[in-house]
Amino acid sequence: MKRVLLVVALLALAAPAWAQFETATVVGTVRDATGAVVPDAKVTLTNTATGVTAEKNSDANGNFEFFTVRIGTYVVTAEKTGFSIALVDNVQVTVGARQRVDLSMAVGQLTETVTVSSRVIPTRAIAAR
Picture 1 (cartoon, rainbow, N blue to C red):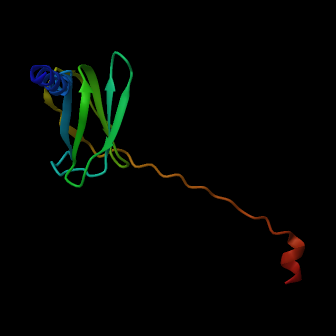
Picture 2: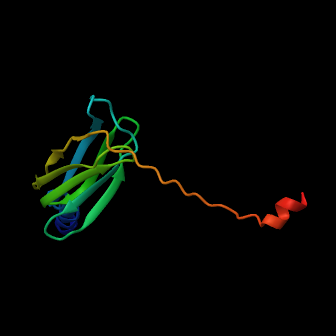
């Protein structure tokens, strides 16, 4: 009976360990052209075969980390207002790897939208004043 319990316990512990090797981790840092970190950039990880995406924001040090990433080929992008989109494609994620993908963002074109609205005041209202 003790041997049966021991075998069951070993099998229960082996299942989580086996699952760890079917995925990987993707980590990196988002920086600007001067090398300064870019906090709060939206980083997107896209599997090129399935189109499945995951999103994270870079932390205060520009770092990001995606856990339990399935093996495959990915595109990693970073975007933030005031910068052009940074893209690294053909990222090969392999079983059990800790894949590093650093992104460099260039200052982009800033655009503004100006909305002008007016209220027409009738001529009679002006003359009455």
